[in-house]
Image (cartoon, rainbow, N blue to C red; front, side, top):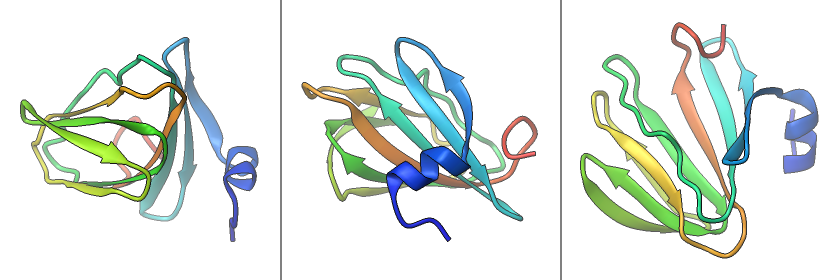
Length: 112
């Protein structure tokens, strides 16, 4: 059981790190719990999955989430569902880190 962000970063695997962000993955039996810390003024690369749905939970900061070329404001506490095949990207528009959790089914390259 994990009860805090600090505990999550200690137990999860750091899978990506750059001047843009840090991404931590914690693999469960069938799901991946992934936390991204997106730095000020940066964005994720954006992608879509033909076979995987995702749920995003924004836990701190302010930004925008692009879903198939439509931008939606996001703030702490927002939950965004991403259906299969929908292109999605997150932008940090705030003046501090934007942190969010993504939950998705394991797929080749993530969570194995």
